[in-house]
Image (cartoon, rainbow, N blue to C red; front, side):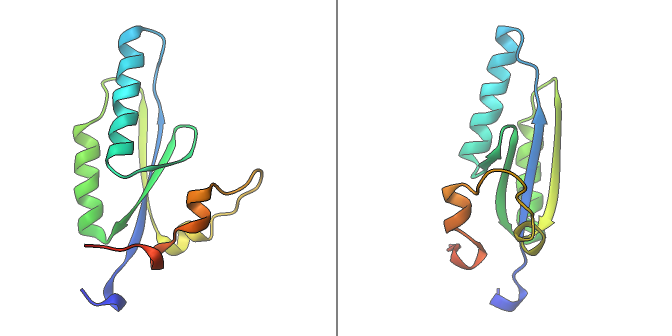
Length: 110
């Protein structure tokens, strides 16, 4: 794929899961571990994101995400271009070390 035709995108997952019972806490932990193992980085509490290379890659990760959903709670996924993600305004706080050092031009794809 030529560099000009690559379309880096971000998948952003927002979730609100119940954690009252032991089973709900376990479902939360399993889902969070899935996100981390699948390459998502924590942007803030209950908001995780990952970079994907185009629509096909995004679809693949959405299918993986759908297969790993817990039974209860609210989970949403937003797909944005890398340009839109980079233009996000940080109103309070500071960027994480990961956000400061890695951008689309620095990603190596094998």
